[in-house]
Length: 73
Image (cartoon, rainbow, N blue to C red; front, side, top):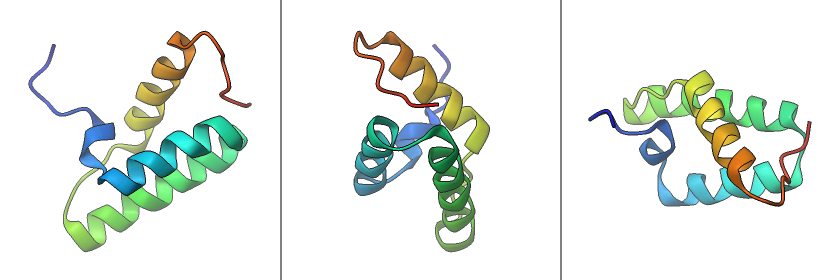
C-alpha cells in the first residue's frame, strides 16, 4: 500500500461521520456536491488538499464491498 494517506483520513472525525451518513442516505449527486464543497473549505481554511474525485472513488469502492449496497445513484 502507498505511504500516502487516504483522502478519507484527511477529513476530521465529524466530516468523516457526515460523509458516511450521506453515502447511506442521500443521492450520489448530493454526496459529490458535499465532497467538492468540503475540499474547497479544507484548502482555504485548513491548508489541506483533498482530491475530491479520489475521495469519491475511495468511498464508492468501500461501499461496493459492503453486502447491503446502500449507495444511492
